[in-house]
Image (cartoon, rainbow, N blue to C red):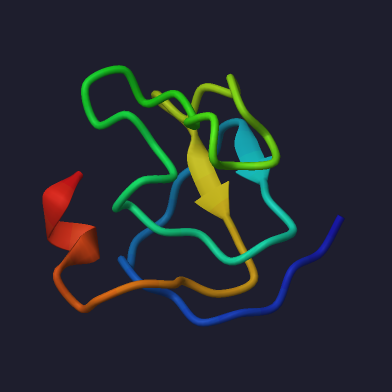
Length: 68
């Protein structure tokens, strides 16, 4: 599978990716202590811990990425 997008944090890595098809927010969509997607998200219960997140766009305020 090939994705095109904007790099948020440069570098290189390999590993498992979690692909979500809806906009994502670190404020409310994820439990910051466990890395598990919250009940408000369509992929409720999915763990992002130790994985790469691929999403179409972010949602929420500019402070959101600094919370997680």
